[in-house]
Length: 133
Ligand code: CTP
Image (cartoon, rainbow, N blue to C red; front, top):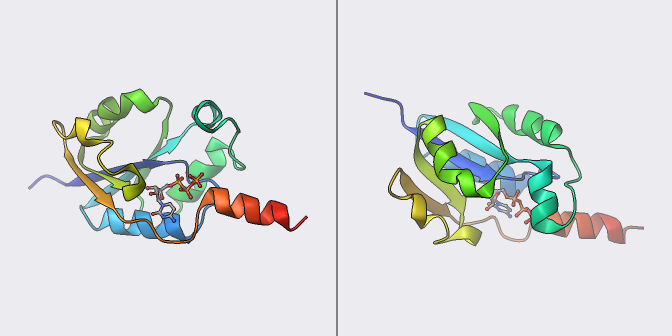
């Protein structure tokens, strides 16, 4: 029987426990987990600021996790379907902050939204650390 590859996407900046729990739970939906880490330029375009850690650093951190089998750089948000096909993704897992917004790829794979870990986010951490002065 062929391997069931799970794919997920994210920035994973200032890596925190919400990230690790999402990746561990995503991995449970198949045999192999591939993670698309969003490019620095994509974050600048999307959020108006570069991530704290560079794309190379963020990919290195995510790739070091036991539950992650491979990482790649996500350079365009519009190419989700192409990335899923290229990586052989059978299941797309996203946090429920994206609920419904990736249903358009359900013609090429199963789409699952998992609940986020409450009370932690990269944005919150950056604000918290900045407030320490
Ligand atoms: N995630 C999660 N629980 C959290 C934070 C993130 O499950 N508390 C998940 C997201 O749903 C996504 C992945 O981790 O599937 C990567 O999220 P990312 O956007 O990189 O992290 P955030 O902390 O949400 O970043 P930001 O505050 O910049 O939006």
